[in-house]
Image (cartoon, rainbow, N blue to C red; front, side):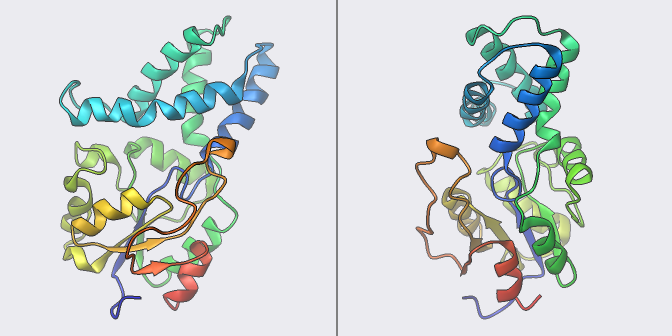
Length: 237
C-alpha cells in the first residue's frame, strides 16, 4: 500500500468498469430477435473481442494510420459477419450493432464505487475507446466521470506511454500522483513503468468460459482490492 494518496484515479474501462461480454451478448441477442436475424451472437462477440488487440496493434506498429476504436471495431465486425455467415443485415443494422460498445453496462460495484471516489479524487476512464464512445457509455450507464481520457486525445493506444503520461500532462500532475486502476495486470505493468500508482481488482468472469488470465494480481501493485467499492474504502472515500 502506497504511503501517499493519488490526486487522480483513471480506470481501464472494457472489462474493468463495464461488463462488455454479457452486455453485448444480451444487446445483440435482443436485436437479432427483433429483426428476425439468427446468429450465434456469443461466438460473434467473443471473436469481435479477440480482434480488438490485433487491430490496435496494427495502428501501434504503423501498419495503419491513426484510426479510432469505433472504426477498428466496424472493420472487424464487417469481416466477422461474413466469416460467421450472418446474412440479412443492412447498413443501419451494422451501425446499430457497432454502437453496442457505447451501450455497455457497468459491473454492480462500478457506479457506487466511482461515486464515492469522485467525492475525493479526480476520476476518469483511461481507455482505448474514443471520446465519443466513452462519453455515450457514461451517459448510458451513469458513470460519474470528471474527465474522459479517450485514446483519440493522444493519438495512441495503451500500452503506449503517451497514454499514461498524457493523462498526467493534461491534469498538470506528476505521474506519481496519478493512479491507474484496472482488472488487467499488463495494463498496470505499463502504467507502473511510466511512474503511475497502480490498483488491481479481478473481474474473473470478464471473458466468460474463455477467461484464462487476470484471476489475481501478479505484480507489485500499490493496491490489490476486491472491486471499486473496496478501492474506495481502502483510499478513505
